[in-house]
Image 1 (cartoon, rainbow, N blue to C red):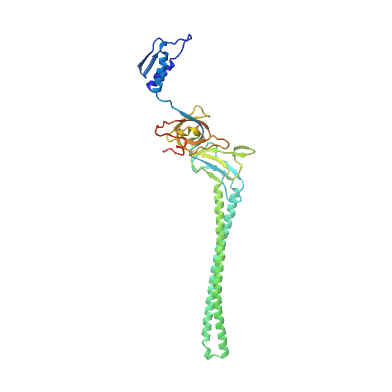
Image 2 (image 1 turned 90 degrees about the horizontal axis):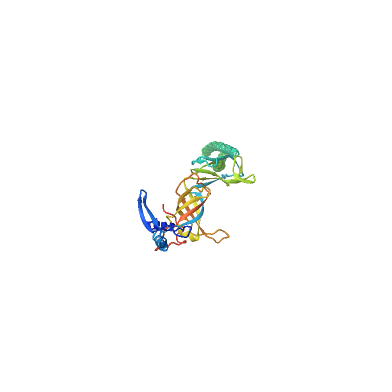
Length: 385
Protein backbone atom coordinates (compact mmCIF):
# COMPACT_ATOMS: atom_id res chain seq x y z
CA UNK A 1 0.00 0.00 0.00
CA UNK A 2 1.25 3.52 -0.84
CA UNK A 3 1.87 6.29 1.70
CA UNK A 4 -1.41 7.99 0.69
CA UNK A 5 -3.31 4.79 1.30
CA UNK A 6 -1.80 4.41 4.77
CA UNK A 7 -2.72 8.01 5.67
CA UNK A 8 -6.32 7.52 4.50
CA UNK A 9 -6.61 4.30 6.47
CA UNK A 10 -5.43 6.04 9.64
CA UNK A 11 -7.87 8.92 9.12
CA UNK A 12 -10.86 6.60 8.79
CA UNK A 13 -9.84 4.59 11.81
CA UNK A 14 -9.84 7.78 13.93
CA UNK A 15 -13.47 8.57 13.13
CA UNK A 16 -14.87 7.40 16.49
CA UNK A 17 -17.38 8.89 18.85
CA UNK A 18 -17.49 9.04 22.59
CA UNK A 19 -20.59 8.35 24.71
CA UNK A 20 -21.82 12.00 24.59
CA UNK A 21 -21.58 12.15 20.79
CA UNK A 22 -18.39 14.26 20.64
CA UNK A 23 -15.16 13.47 18.77
CA UNK A 24 -12.00 12.60 20.64
CA UNK A 25 -8.92 14.78 20.24
CA UNK A 26 -8.24 18.51 20.27
CA UNK A 27 -6.11 19.02 17.19
CA UNK A 28 -5.65 17.58 13.70
CA UNK A 29 -2.00 16.97 13.05
CA UNK A 30 -0.24 14.48 10.79
CA UNK A 31 3.36 13.61 11.51
CA UNK A 32 5.79 10.75 10.83
CA UNK A 33 8.13 9.16 13.36
CA UNK A 34 11.16 7.10 12.32
CA UNK A 35 11.52 3.77 14.17
CA UNK A 36 13.62 0.66 13.76
CA UNK A 37 10.92 -0.94 11.67
CA UNK A 38 10.36 2.11 9.45
CA UNK A 39 8.27 5.24 9.45
CA UNK A 40 5.10 5.28 11.63
CA UNK A 41 2.34 7.75 10.77
CA UNK A 42 0.20 9.43 13.49
CA UNK A 43 -2.98 11.56 13.29
CA UNK A 44 -4.63 13.70 15.97
CA UNK A 45 -8.27 14.64 15.40
CA UNK A 46 -10.05 18.00 16.01
CA UNK A 47 -13.85 17.96 16.14
CA UNK A 48 -14.08 21.05 13.90
CA UNK A 49 -12.30 19.24 11.09
CA UNK A 50 -14.60 16.21 10.66
CA UNK A 51 -16.00 16.98 7.22
CA UNK A 52 -12.66 18.17 5.76
CA UNK A 53 -11.08 15.05 7.16
CA UNK A 54 -13.55 12.77 5.34
CA UNK A 55 -12.91 14.63 2.09
CA UNK A 56 -9.15 14.32 2.52
CA UNK A 57 -9.49 10.60 3.28
CA UNK A 58 -11.49 10.05 0.10
CA UNK A 59 -8.91 11.87 -2.01
CA UNK A 60 -6.07 9.94 -0.46
CA UNK A 61 -7.82 6.62 -1.03
CA UNK A 62 -8.35 7.56 -4.65
CA UNK A 63 -4.65 8.29 -5.02
CA UNK A 64 -3.65 4.90 -3.50
CA UNK A 65 -3.25 1.50 -5.19
CA UNK A 66 -6.42 -0.15 -6.51
CA UNK A 67 -7.66 -3.10 -4.42
CA UNK A 68 -6.83 -6.61 -5.62
CA UNK A 69 -9.86 -8.38 -7.11
CA UNK A 70 -10.38 -12.13 -7.25
CA UNK A 71 -12.98 -14.49 -8.72
CA UNK A 72 -14.14 -17.34 -6.49
CA UNK A 73 -14.72 -20.70 -8.16
CA UNK A 74 -15.08 -24.29 -7.04
CA UNK A 75 -12.91 -27.11 -8.27
CA UNK A 76 -11.72 -30.67 -7.84
CA UNK A 77 -8.13 -31.75 -7.24
CA UNK A 78 -6.76 -33.85 -10.09
CA UNK A 79 -3.42 -35.50 -10.76
CA UNK A 80 -1.43 -34.14 -13.68
CA UNK A 81 -0.20 -37.64 -14.53
CA UNK A 82 -2.58 -40.50 -13.81
CA UNK A 83 -3.70 -43.74 -15.39
CA UNK A 84 -6.60 -46.06 -14.71
CA UNK A 85 -5.69 -49.75 -14.47
CA UNK A 86 -8.36 -52.15 -15.73
CA UNK A 87 -8.95 -55.83 -15.14
CA UNK A 88 -7.09 -57.51 -18.02
CA UNK A 89 -8.95 -58.72 -21.07
CA UNK A 90 -7.81 -62.14 -22.27
CA UNK A 91 -8.46 -63.85 -25.60
CA UNK A 92 -10.54 -66.96 -25.74
CA UNK A 93 -13.80 -67.99 -24.14
CA UNK A 94 -13.56 -65.22 -21.52
CA UNK A 95 -15.47 -65.04 -18.25
CA UNK A 96 -14.79 -63.60 -14.81
CA UNK A 97 -11.26 -63.60 -13.42
CA UNK A 98 -10.38 -64.52 -9.84
CA UNK A 99 -8.24 -61.94 -8.06
CA UNK A 100 -5.24 -63.53 -6.33
CA UNK A 101 -3.20 -60.58 -5.00
CA UNK A 102 -3.72 -56.80 -4.95
CA UNK A 103 -1.49 -53.87 -3.99
CA UNK A 104 -2.41 -51.94 -0.85
CA UNK A 105 -4.33 -48.70 -1.14
CA UNK A 106 -1.91 -45.75 -0.97
CA UNK A 107 1.19 -47.79 -1.79
CA UNK A 108 3.95 -46.15 -3.85
CA UNK A 109 5.04 -48.20 -6.86
CA UNK A 110 7.61 -47.88 -9.62
CA UNK A 111 7.25 -48.83 -13.31
CA UNK A 112 7.23 -52.61 -13.63
CA UNK A 113 6.10 -53.35 -10.07
CA UNK A 114 3.27 -55.84 -9.65
CA UNK A 115 -0.10 -54.26 -8.92
CA UNK A 116 -2.36 -57.32 -9.05
CA UNK A 117 -2.30 -60.97 -10.07
CA UNK A 118 -5.16 -63.24 -11.11
CA UNK A 119 -5.63 -66.98 -10.96
CA UNK A 120 -3.72 -68.55 -13.89
CA UNK A 121 -4.56 -72.23 -13.34
CA UNK A 122 -6.92 -72.47 -16.32
CA UNK A 123 -4.62 -70.47 -18.61
CA UNK A 124 -1.63 -72.64 -17.67
CA UNK A 125 -3.66 -75.78 -18.42
CA UNK A 126 -4.68 -74.43 -21.82
CA UNK A 127 -1.08 -73.40 -22.48
CA UNK A 128 0.21 -76.91 -21.74
CA UNK A 129 -2.41 -78.45 -24.02
CA UNK A 130 -1.58 -76.05 -26.84
CA UNK A 131 2.15 -76.65 -26.39
CA UNK A 132 1.62 -80.43 -26.47
CA UNK A 133 -0.33 -80.23 -29.75
CA UNK A 134 2.31 -77.95 -31.19
CA UNK A 135 5.12 -80.35 -30.30
CA UNK A 136 3.12 -83.31 -31.71
CA UNK A 137 2.58 -81.52 -35.02
CA UNK A 138 6.29 -80.73 -35.15
CA UNK A 139 7.09 -84.44 -34.82
CA UNK A 140 4.53 -85.31 -37.48
CA UNK A 141 6.16 -82.86 -39.86
CA UNK A 142 9.57 -84.41 -39.27
CA UNK A 143 8.19 -87.89 -39.88
CA UNK A 144 6.34 -86.79 -43.00
CA UNK A 145 9.43 -85.07 -44.36
CA UNK A 146 11.52 -88.21 -43.78
CA UNK A 147 8.85 -90.41 -45.41
CA UNK A 148 8.70 -88.10 -48.43
CA UNK A 149 12.47 -88.27 -48.83
CA UNK A 150 12.34 -92.07 -48.64
CA UNK A 151 9.58 -92.31 -51.23
CA UNK A 152 11.41 -89.89 -53.49
CA UNK A 153 14.56 -92.01 -53.37
CA UNK A 154 12.54 -95.16 -54.16
CA UNK A 155 10.86 -93.47 -57.11
CA UNK A 156 14.22 -92.34 -58.43
CA UNK A 157 15.51 -95.90 -58.19
CA UNK A 158 12.42 -97.28 -59.99
CA UNK A 159 12.82 -94.70 -62.73
CA UNK A 160 16.48 -95.54 -63.17
CA UNK A 161 15.60 -99.24 -63.42
CA UNK A 162 12.91 -98.51 -66.00
CA UNK A 163 15.36 -96.42 -68.03
CA UNK A 164 17.89 -99.28 -67.90
CA UNK A 165 15.25 -101.71 -69.12
CA UNK A 166 14.44 -99.28 -71.94
CA UNK A 167 18.07 -99.15 -73.05
CA UNK A 168 18.30 -102.94 -72.92
CA UNK A 169 15.16 -103.26 -75.04
CA UNK A 170 16.61 -100.82 -77.58
CA UNK A 171 19.78 -102.90 -77.80
CA UNK A 172 17.76 -106.07 -78.31
CA UNK A 173 15.70 -104.45 -81.04
CA UNK A 174 18.89 -103.75 -83.01
CA UNK A 175 19.42 -107.56 -83.44
CA UNK A 176 16.49 -107.75 -85.82
CA UNK A 177 18.39 -108.88 -88.98
CA UNK A 178 19.85 -111.93 -87.24
CA UNK A 179 16.68 -112.97 -85.40
CA UNK A 180 13.56 -114.66 -86.51
CA UNK A 181 10.41 -112.72 -87.20
CA UNK A 182 8.80 -113.91 -83.93
CA UNK A 183 11.80 -112.77 -81.84
CA UNK A 184 11.84 -109.42 -83.63
CA UNK A 185 8.16 -108.89 -82.72
CA UNK A 186 8.85 -109.82 -79.10
CA UNK A 187 11.75 -107.35 -78.87
CA UNK A 188 9.57 -104.63 -80.41
CA UNK A 189 6.81 -105.24 -77.85
CA UNK A 190 9.36 -105.11 -74.99
CA UNK A 191 10.73 -101.84 -76.33
CA UNK A 192 7.29 -100.25 -76.45
CA UNK A 193 6.48 -101.52 -72.95
CA UNK A 194 9.77 -100.08 -71.60
CA UNK A 195 9.09 -96.69 -73.17
CA UNK A 196 5.55 -96.61 -71.74
CA UNK A 197 6.83 -97.64 -68.31
CA UNK A 198 9.43 -94.82 -68.24
CA UNK A 199 6.86 -92.24 -69.36
CA UNK A 200 4.38 -93.49 -66.76
CA UNK A 201 6.96 -93.28 -63.96
CA UNK A 202 7.95 -89.76 -64.97
CA UNK A 203 4.33 -88.57 -64.88
CA UNK A 204 3.46 -90.38 -61.65
CA UNK A 205 6.61 -89.15 -59.89
CA UNK A 206 5.64 -85.54 -60.59
CA UNK A 207 2.13 -85.97 -59.20
CA UNK A 208 3.36 -87.93 -56.20
CA UNK A 209 5.89 -85.20 -55.35
CA UNK A 210 3.17 -82.54 -55.64
CA UNK A 211 0.81 -84.52 -53.40
CA UNK A 212 3.43 -85.19 -50.76
CA UNK A 213 4.45 -81.51 -50.74
CA UNK A 214 0.79 -80.56 -50.23
CA UNK A 215 0.41 -83.01 -47.33
CA UNK A 216 3.56 -81.61 -45.73
CA UNK A 217 2.30 -78.04 -46.19
CA UNK A 218 -0.99 -78.95 -44.48
CA UNK A 219 0.89 -80.20 -41.45
CA UNK A 220 3.02 -77.05 -41.42
CA UNK A 221 -0.08 -74.84 -41.53
CA UNK A 222 -1.60 -76.80 -38.65
CA UNK A 223 1.63 -76.34 -36.71
CA UNK A 224 1.64 -72.58 -37.42
CA UNK A 225 -1.96 -72.28 -36.30
CA UNK A 226 -1.11 -74.13 -33.13
CA UNK A 227 1.85 -71.79 -32.65
CA UNK A 228 -0.63 -68.90 -32.67
CA UNK A 229 -2.62 -70.68 -29.96
CA UNK A 230 0.53 -71.16 -27.87
CA UNK A 231 1.44 -67.48 -28.27
CA UNK A 232 -2.09 -66.43 -27.33
CA UNK A 233 -2.11 -68.57 -24.19
CA UNK A 234 1.35 -67.32 -23.21
CA UNK A 235 0.19 -63.74 -23.61
CA UNK A 236 -2.97 -64.45 -21.62
CA UNK A 237 -0.89 -65.91 -18.83
CA UNK A 238 1.34 -62.81 -18.79
CA UNK A 239 -1.65 -60.44 -18.84
CA UNK A 240 -2.93 -61.96 -15.61
CA UNK A 241 -0.03 -60.22 -13.85
CA UNK A 242 -0.82 -56.50 -13.90
CA UNK A 243 2.28 -54.26 -13.66
CA UNK A 244 2.58 -50.55 -12.98
CA UNK A 245 2.95 -48.49 -16.20
CA UNK A 246 4.14 -45.33 -14.38
CA UNK A 247 5.56 -44.30 -11.03
CA UNK A 248 2.89 -43.20 -8.59
CA UNK A 249 0.50 -43.98 -5.76
CA UNK A 250 -2.20 -46.66 -5.78
CA UNK A 251 -5.82 -45.59 -5.32
CA UNK A 252 -8.24 -48.53 -5.37
CA UNK A 253 -11.49 -48.08 -7.28
CA UNK A 254 -14.90 -48.98 -5.86
CA UNK A 255 -16.56 -51.99 -7.47
CA UNK A 256 -19.91 -53.67 -7.00
CA UNK A 257 -19.40 -56.66 -4.72
CA UNK A 258 -21.78 -58.46 -2.37
CA UNK A 259 -24.62 -56.05 -3.20
CA UNK A 260 -22.54 -53.02 -2.12
CA UNK A 261 -19.75 -50.80 -3.32
CA UNK A 262 -16.24 -51.37 -2.01
CA UNK A 263 -12.66 -52.06 -2.88
CA UNK A 264 -11.75 -55.32 -4.58
CA UNK A 265 -10.37 -58.06 -2.33
CA UNK A 266 -8.49 -61.28 -2.90
CA UNK A 267 -10.78 -64.01 -4.14
CA UNK A 268 -13.29 -61.68 -5.84
CA UNK A 269 -14.62 -62.55 -9.29
CA UNK A 270 -13.96 -59.53 -11.51
CA UNK A 271 -15.28 -58.86 -14.99
CA UNK A 272 -12.57 -58.20 -17.62
CA UNK A 273 -12.30 -54.53 -18.56
CA UNK A 274 -13.76 -53.15 -15.32
CA UNK A 275 -11.76 -50.47 -13.41
CA UNK A 276 -9.50 -51.99 -10.75
CA UNK A 277 -7.41 -49.07 -9.45
CA UNK A 278 -6.04 -45.69 -10.39
CA UNK A 279 -2.35 -44.85 -10.41
CA UNK A 280 -1.40 -41.17 -10.03
CA UNK A 281 1.79 -39.19 -9.47
CA UNK A 282 1.45 -37.32 -6.13
CA UNK A 283 4.31 -34.94 -6.97
CA UNK A 284 2.29 -33.06 -9.62
CA UNK A 285 -1.26 -32.06 -8.78
CA UNK A 286 -3.71 -29.65 -10.39
CA UNK A 287 -7.16 -28.27 -9.70
CA UNK A 288 -9.93 -28.40 -12.29
CA UNK A 289 -12.30 -25.47 -11.84
CA UNK A 290 -15.55 -24.34 -13.41
CA UNK A 291 -15.59 -20.58 -14.03
CA UNK A 292 -18.81 -18.80 -14.91
CA UNK A 293 -19.12 -17.39 -18.40
CA UNK A 294 -19.20 -13.73 -17.19
CA UNK A 295 -15.88 -14.28 -15.38
CA UNK A 296 -14.17 -16.03 -18.28
CA UNK A 297 -11.88 -13.04 -18.87
CA UNK A 298 -9.74 -14.02 -15.86
CA UNK A 299 -8.59 -17.19 -17.66
CA UNK A 300 -5.51 -15.98 -19.47
CA UNK A 301 -1.81 -16.94 -19.53
CA UNK A 302 -0.09 -15.73 -16.39
CA UNK A 303 -3.17 -15.92 -14.18
CA UNK A 304 -2.59 -17.18 -10.66
CA UNK A 305 -4.93 -18.58 -8.05
CA UNK A 306 -5.08 -19.46 -4.37
CA UNK A 307 -6.50 -22.90 -3.56
CA UNK A 308 -8.31 -23.63 -0.26
CA UNK A 309 -9.10 -27.29 0.43
CA UNK A 310 -12.47 -28.00 2.04
CA UNK A 311 -11.12 -31.08 3.83
CA UNK A 312 -8.10 -29.19 5.24
CA UNK A 313 -9.10 -25.57 5.92
CA UNK A 314 -5.65 -24.75 7.27
CA UNK A 315 -3.96 -25.80 4.00
CA UNK A 316 -3.62 -23.09 1.35
CA UNK A 317 -1.57 -23.49 -1.83
CA UNK A 318 -0.98 -21.43 -4.93
CA UNK A 319 -1.49 -22.45 -8.55
CA UNK A 320 -0.85 -21.08 -12.02
CA UNK A 321 -3.04 -21.18 -15.11
CA UNK A 322 -2.39 -24.07 -17.49
CA UNK A 323 -5.28 -24.33 -19.97
CA UNK A 324 -9.00 -23.67 -20.47
CA UNK A 325 -11.80 -24.94 -22.64
CA UNK A 326 -12.41 -22.94 -25.86
CA UNK A 327 -16.14 -22.49 -25.29
CA UNK A 328 -18.48 -22.36 -22.32
CA UNK A 329 -20.83 -25.29 -21.86
CA UNK A 330 -23.81 -25.97 -19.63
CA UNK A 331 -25.02 -29.22 -18.03
CA UNK A 332 -28.18 -30.86 -19.28
CA UNK A 333 -31.26 -29.13 -17.93
CA UNK A 334 -29.67 -25.77 -17.02
CA UNK A 335 -28.77 -22.64 -18.94
CA UNK A 336 -25.83 -21.60 -16.77
CA UNK A 337 -22.66 -21.93 -18.83
CA UNK A 338 -19.17 -22.33 -17.42
CA UNK A 339 -15.62 -22.62 -18.70
CA UNK A 340 -13.53 -25.60 -17.62
CA UNK A 341 -10.02 -24.52 -16.62
CA UNK A 342 -6.97 -26.26 -15.23
CA UNK A 343 -4.59 -24.68 -12.71
CA UNK A 344 -1.38 -26.54 -11.81
CA UNK A 345 -0.53 -26.39 -8.10
CA UNK A 346 2.93 -25.01 -7.38
CA UNK A 347 3.54 -26.79 -4.06
CA UNK A 348 3.54 -30.44 -3.03
CA UNK A 349 1.85 -31.72 0.11
CA UNK A 350 1.00 -35.26 1.24
CA UNK A 351 -2.56 -34.13 1.98
CA UNK A 352 -3.16 -33.30 -1.68
CA UNK A 353 -4.99 -36.21 -3.26
CA UNK A 354 -7.36 -36.56 -6.23
CA UNK A 355 -11.11 -35.90 -5.96
CA UNK A 356 -10.79 -33.45 -3.05
CA UNK A 357 -13.09 -30.42 -3.35
CA UNK A 358 -11.52 -26.98 -3.17
CA UNK A 359 -12.36 -23.28 -3.33
CA UNK A 360 -10.21 -21.38 -5.82
CA UNK A 361 -9.63 -17.61 -5.74
CA UNK A 362 -8.44 -16.54 -9.21
CA UNK A 363 -6.62 -13.23 -9.25
CA UNK A 364 -7.89 -10.71 -11.79
CA UNK A 365 -4.98 -9.48 -13.88
CA UNK A 366 -4.80 -5.83 -14.89
CA UNK A 367 -5.42 -5.45 -18.62
CA UNK A 368 -4.23 -2.36 -20.56
CA UNK A 369 -7.03 -0.10 -21.74
CA UNK A 370 -5.99 -0.47 -25.38
CA UNK A 371 -6.20 -4.29 -25.14
CA UNK A 372 -9.60 -5.24 -23.80
CA UNK A 373 -10.18 -8.90 -23.00
CA UNK A 374 -13.54 -10.55 -23.42
CA UNK A 375 -14.77 -13.84 -22.08
CA UNK A 376 -14.92 -15.28 -25.57
CA UNK A 377 -11.61 -13.92 -26.81
CA UNK A 378 -9.12 -15.60 -24.53
CA UNK A 379 -10.35 -19.15 -24.16
CA UNK A 380 -8.78 -22.28 -25.51
CA UNK A 381 -5.28 -21.06 -24.72
CA UNK A 382 -2.49 -22.85 -22.96
CA UNK A 383 -0.01 -21.02 -20.83
CA UNK A 384 3.52 -21.03 -22.19
CA UNK A 385 6.12 -22.78 -20.11
